[in-house]
Amino acid sequence: MSISTEAPRWRTLSMVAVAMSVAFAFVAIAPTAGASSPSETYRITVENLTHGQPLTPAVVAVHGHGFRLFRNHRTASNGIQQLAENGGVPVLVAELEANPAVASVAVVGNAPIPPGGSQSALVTTSRGADRISLAAMLVCTNDGFGGLASVKLSTASGSKVRYAYAYDAGTEINTQDVDDLVPPCDGDMTTGTGVSNPALAEHGNVMRHRGILRNVGDLTPGQHGWHGPVMRVTIERVATYQITIQNLTGGQPITPAVVAIHHGRHELFQLGMAASNGIQQLAENGGVPILAAEVAANPDVTASTVVGAGPVGPGGSATASLEVIGSGSRLSLAAMLVCTNDGFGGIDGKRLPRWIGESSTAYAGAYDAGTEFNTELIADLVPPCDGDLSSGTGESNPLLAEGGVIRRHGGITGAGDLGAVYDWRDPVIRVTITRTG
Image (cartoon, rainbow, N blue to C red; front, side, top):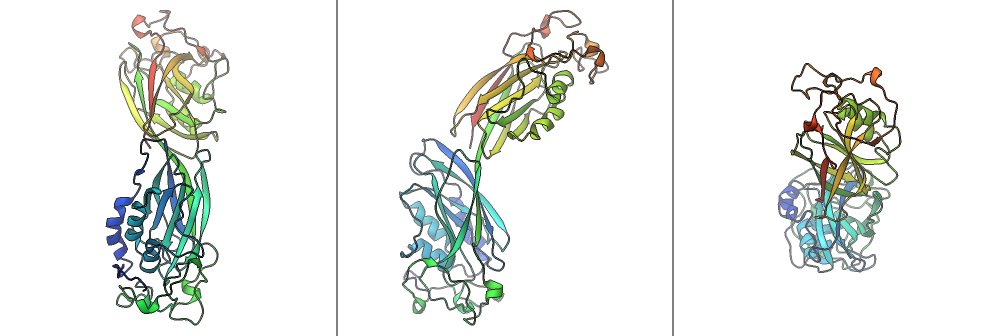
């Protein structure tokens, strides 16, 4: 191997895991410059498309327009050379970390990616660093690697797929002899070399790889060759949020809240319009699972969750985390006001915090689903508003069907068993949303 530094080499594929104990420290590193600037998170998934070529873990660089990890017909950097000849993932990572043009570095996988296998990692971009490049060694080659250079990341689109082709680093003659390769391509742990061989120095430039040639060395096209791209790279925009609900009423427990992440065209509920079955079941019977299923099945909803594991009492709070893959800019939420016939607290279309670390607060008003008359009788409510589990009902009563539309709730009037302790003044729920990733 033509490396004058005689850098250490992964002697076997099993040693990748050992080397990665060093490299893994570089996974999803925060931007080295402008760390306080707005940022986005992406999941990078690398899939090995070959039928007989294991890949090393892929090194990902996040950078701006002017950086190139490699260029066709140009000399490979030491890091690319070390990766392509020796599987030197840590060497390339260190080179990129030292480059001021690179904002962050990630390593996809902590062991070889076998044919047909895939691995994922998260990367974070910052303003001015909105592109990625990546490279992974084709292990059963002298100096081959799969690579992508300067793929633009979009904050608007949900995900994209790119295909990485095979390149020859141009630093070593392609003998295709197992004695010159990272072992154990022939299955024998004792063959292969762990040091660079100056006699094989090629001193060429990066170019598209010609593949495994027939009648050259020990490798065969049928076993170690490939056709077309060698990696499928899926890039998904990922955002994580922490959502906290706080019951602001003095005497109304609320159910767990159903949360939907969506675009502006989706409406969880709308004043003056009939309630969906999910909202009706939530508002009348505390049917959290029914509304949650309805929301999850809606194609306009990007992500959904339920905040809280049980009723949230007056003054109480509950928190949940939510991961959004793809796009979605708004949050809607609904939770039943338990001691009502068909009341709920809701938010429709609150804009989400855009940047990591940013928080916003919204307040949910009280709504009447318009599906059941407000008798305010314990026998018609979800138990146990009176403290008696045997009283109340968990089903809709057709005799109380109102057939109306969603409107602002008028509060507790004292018409039935409920007194002023169950009444409230808007808002009924405080919702705090923090973008955490």
